[in-house]
Length: 248
Ligand code: OAD
Image 1 (cartoon, helix red, strand yellow):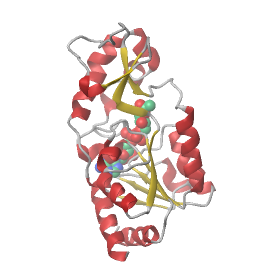
Image 2: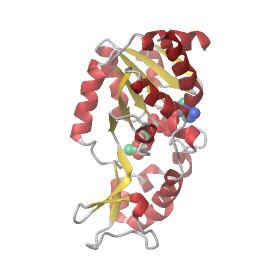
Image 3: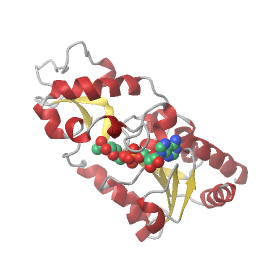
Image 4: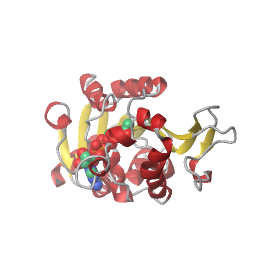
């Protein structure tokens, strides 16, 4: 692992247009559970019953009570960990330009990254299903479920649920940055959900080096990524960034 960190640090120190694709695994060290694998959310609840748009439209109170309320509690109390902070430092150093994240926790922006494509939206905002008004999640009154807008409409987190499309501008911009980066860091994603999982494939086909950082191998590991650094994102990214700073 030390050799791989060293190799990646050398590549990063000489690179300019580096993009990171991040997933739930990058926020695990911030206390936010992942979706798949041990302790994953989808082990406890069925995504089709709680994270599909049809389930929400059918029974918003149920989805709010058994999924969104808990999510709000966890996200309200989470802060960036060493992996988020390292990516922010790599942007300061002029190495990382853009982050494509599947996460809705906003932790990359809190850490300091300025160009973050939120592929699946952001939980920090709610959208009224009737008048389309946006409202900040922290200011939301959840004493009544489902919470409602002043117009009477129900609020839904401004996130992409299963069965909804990725906002086209996010998809197009992600494809554009993936196809022009020189290195793509793929951090803490199982790469099981499309189209986000296609971004490393696009990067690879356009000639980029694709480096995974994950606790375990994924479907990208054999075919798409050049190599994988196995371990916790926070620990690896911290060591990697210190090494980059030493080399500059
Ligand atoms: P997953 O939960 O599918 O995958 C998390 C990945 O992070 C796994 O590959 C783990 O091995 C890895 N992991 C866990 N802890 C880690 C750590 N401390 N350091 C490094 N890696 C770690 O999450 P995503 O790939 O983000 O979509 O899931 C993609 C999408 O599926 C989510 O955006 C969400 C979900 O359903 C929607 O809700 C639309």
